[in-house]
Length: 421
Ligand SMILES: *Cc1c(COP(=O)(O)O)cnc(C)c1O
Image 1 (cartoon, rainbow, N blue to C red):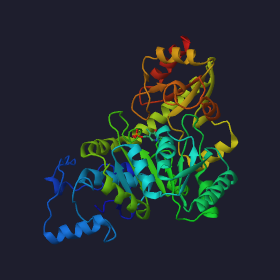
Image 2: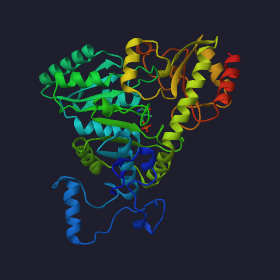
Image 3: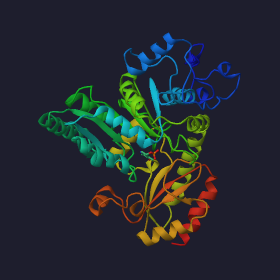
Image 4: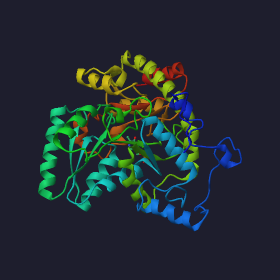
């Protein structure tokens, strides 16, 4: 890896490092940009090198492989990507995956064994919640959850119950898995409180992982609040152009090594073409997120004052003092994904969505273009009615991810769509 992260003792900022960190043009015919390495395997300089590399891959020697071996384990585009992803979160290492869900599933499989209990915040991304409840349960792994906005006391009580349950089952509390803010309510998890509760009730061997897809890498840095592992769907803000699917995790080497071992076995690493596209995306991630954040602030102040709007779930306009306190301690920006509550129900929301001309009617978020959807009838359709009410997923809720278009054009679009409600 290139030692290119400081000048005269001044640590370089991520925005600067995204242009060259981890890549040396001299190794690729002077090509300014990394070529896409379409190869399944890598030639060893000598048989002894081949042996040494395999000792690293198989874990016989700590520290991982010293050179490239085979593209299921790693390859140049993915290594550059992983070096640059680690920069954003201030992590020792990052690992790339073919989707956010691959990252999450491989992470959980790495740390869970039969008899174990996972504690998670709720709600999670539907597929994450499904993996825990439907798939891990097949292997004798159970779970307990607490609501995203829970207090330190409430979190500690759930961890205590989980510890008792794990003792009875002959397992351990395998992982605390968080997602903040929760979708679609935007309720924030108090990561500092989770860390304090973990340290009080359990041991530091139980990792705290957090899905930072909605606010990372710019607006939240959960490793700074005491999380151990940060998880991303790179499909969203990091990829940022709605043209790829990928995922990643990052954290200390101690936490990454076992996950790397399972990825070496199962596969699921990001492909070289997608890794290359993500390197291009990372060059502009700060610019794009800043602009999207500014646009969302402008759009939300317009929407808030509109007579047909019943409310907003936007982190820039929190009404609850405790949530505001978590925001102040954890967030560097309010993001650009929020919930819009209309006066009325499904019919009013559908009329609004069908009338939009700039914003596209699609699920997903974090792209250059503005997207809008209706969670109750789309992403959360299969959630039982009772749980929907509990989670605040009402029929009058529209989910909006603001992009980087002109803010006044977006406001004009929302204005005319609201007029047709
Ligand atoms: C999209 C998303 C995922 C899943 O990521 P994929 O790249 O679609 O597999 C996980 N968590 C959150 C919060 C997401 O928004």
